[in-house]
Image (tube, rainbow, N blue to C red):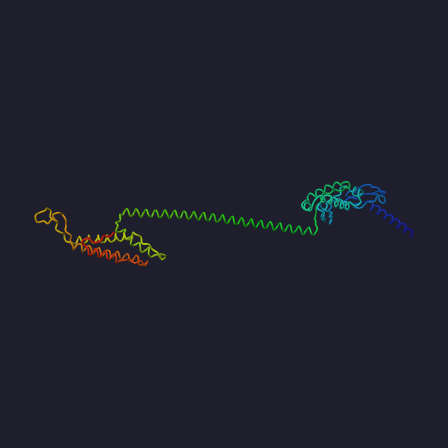
Length: 383
């Protein structure tokens, strides 16, 4: 029974020793720091790892994070130079570099940084209008970072970056800006459409120009080639005609063959008979009459030659060298001439029949009749 108090005392002593050991050892994580006060006065800063302090004498303050931290400040009202109130959201990146200064130089360094950021925003943006505020974020960020870094240096804080997260202008300004942007976009769309139409018309005109040029060059080349072909054909025909040396009879016959082809055209409602038709008919008539005269001369009996010398029994006409006309031969020649004229009249009627022009065979018949009735050559001669 006497051993129970000793056991209790031993247990109490062990507990006290264990608590003392536990309170005298502090383990600090990496990138953390804790300040130690002894009797209310700063003693030291505990580094990461195992640290020993005097229990019940040293007091360890709360842990301080030495890593880079991010703090967002939302809805800070700022007045611009043109008297517009905008709400600005900022994001601040900072890092504690001196745990003692951060713990003893300022009570709440995060609150202090927030208030300092709002003050510097009013100072920087107060000298800018809304347009500059919306388009000068880099300038604002640089100015804020410089001022905050200088002010928070004595607090053991280093400001690494300041970013403008959002700039929220008033609702009326938003609507005006939206209308302005819409008008600007419509303007750019109209300009682009006009440019497209202009470019399309230019390209179309260029294409039409090139097409016309190529078509004109093609027509020119075709006309030149056709002219050269016609010239070569005419030259060959002309050379062939001169080489073969055709007589007037063949030419007149070819001319008479060509005239019906001219008159047979479907679009020919008016046809002018050239003056060469009469010449061609005369050539045909003379050709046929000449051929018949030659044939008649070959079939007729040879006439007795005239007396070679003038004798006593010779008539004065014979003696003077004049031959007497033969009425029978002249009648035969006149008949052949009338037949040729009738053939020419028929050809003329065949030519003028498609045009409805009278061929007037009576004139040719009268001429032939006159030639027949007047074999002695006293009738009218054709022009």
